[in-house]
Length: 56
Image 1 (tube, rainbow, N blue to C red):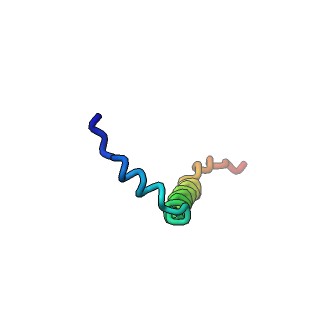
Image 2: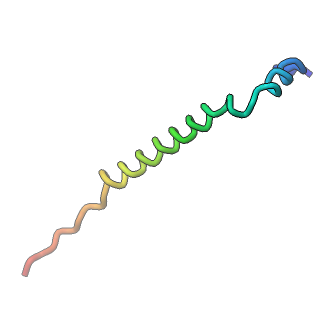
């Protein structure tokens, strides 16, 4: 099999502590925050047009 990983590269990743991946959690939170702000702005800027009311 011609895989891009070898036994040595797996051992290198296995020796890293879980705290070394904290940046990926912060990046995921940043992405979710970006999506939430984008959705909020879409709902804020693109509200349905109000129908004109005829005064009698």
